[in-house]
Amino acid sequence: MKRLKFIIPSLTATLLLFTLSNAQDLTFSKHDIGTVELLPDSDPINLSLNGERIFISEKFESAVLNYNQYSYDANGKTTFSGKLEIPGGDFKNSFDIRDVIIFGNKQYALVQNKDKNTGKNRFLAREVSNGVVSSSETEVMSFAFDKLMNSGFNHVAVSPGNKKMAVMAELPYERKEEASLKIAVYSDGLSKDKEVSLKIPGENTKNKKLILKVADDGTVYIIKRTTLKNGEKSLTIYQLMDDSKLKEYTIDLGDPLYVTSFTHTVNSDNELIVCGIYYERTTLTVNDQKMAGVFYYTNKGKSEDIMTSFALDSPVEILETRKVLISNSTVYLVAEQYKSVSEVANPGSTIPTYNYNYTHKSNYVIGLNMDGSKKFQIELSKDFSATNNNHQFYAAFFICNGKLTAVYNDQIQKYIKNHGAGLIPVLVQIDENGLMHAPIPFEGDFASSTTILYPFFAVQDSDSQLTFLMKQGTQSKLLTVQIKN
Image (tube, rainbow, N blue to C red; front, side, top):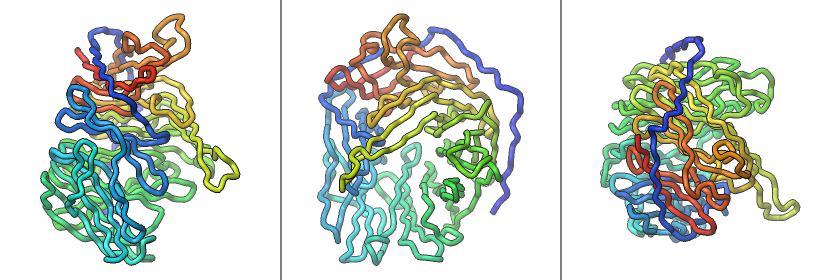
């Protein structure tokens, strides 16, 4: 294992620059799109394909993943609205959708087929057209299993430039043995470039999660998150080399600093970036800790390990990483003061249902140099709470015109004097030096209490155009925002 190189950032306080310039201008267009049903406590899959915008509300329910898809062409016309469905088969030969992706010039549903009769776990790519999942398929992974309760897992990842797709199988767990993997890499058209079988060094554990990443040149990365005592996390990075061996890196901040939340990407040089938040353990209970700082890892040149860490301007009570974005020589780490607590909604029932209580407070934008040293820290202040339906309280983040661009709902009283309580969408841009433009509130009827923007469901159409789902009264709409500088 290689030793990590630490870069100690300057302790000089960062000077944040703000401007009230109105040089930016926003243009809006809306399209009526019928009824959109956003599943409570669901996750978004936001995709675009040849001008088509695809929004998917994903939720694990009734022991399967459910996907509600809403897709629209370049003119805002609905191309599909409903649930992605396939025949589920039976208990001993089941089919279920495990992921939905864009690869090359097509949308695919990745279907897992566990067939006890043949003892095979097959991972199948089926093309999706206008919400219809094809019955024809391409097998992209297959392996044997003995027991349905220990039948392995499949993962899929697409490279940032949409040039490569990687598939990884975690073979069935064997006690006191190393974790066994099969990895395949595909080019456009589902043409297989290579497939390898390998093992992760060290005894396999069940308290782990593997995250698959792939670069545009086909380099495969695996991030292993292991949950330690008191909920602490340990991160190990694996890079698949040309000789089919794994190169290993360990992210170790040193006691008493521990990772709490992290995110990841692959940059244009095909290097992996993993960064996130750490806390300093001062008691035995993780929930009593405040978030203390930021860590950053990259494999520079795919050969040199760079690891940095630095303290936040001041400790923060709760902080979850949301996204990492890159513009030229600046890495933007985005995090949110977020908390989710579930409670049984029907005590005493044999089939319990749950309410989910959410807290959405400030977003933090931390700017870093490509070596991980700190450039700036900015807080986007907001404070909301919700039960079950909280999609309107997330923020969307993109790189537009070379700047980090945030769109989120904020308290309307901040922007319109003497206005009653309510929300209004705003757009904020932050350049690579931490220069933050004043928030631009959306104009027109966006200040109405019956108008709700859903930043959780958003796609980037171009360098200066974003598209969102929104609701106006009882009508769902597609909103396109053009950003002019």
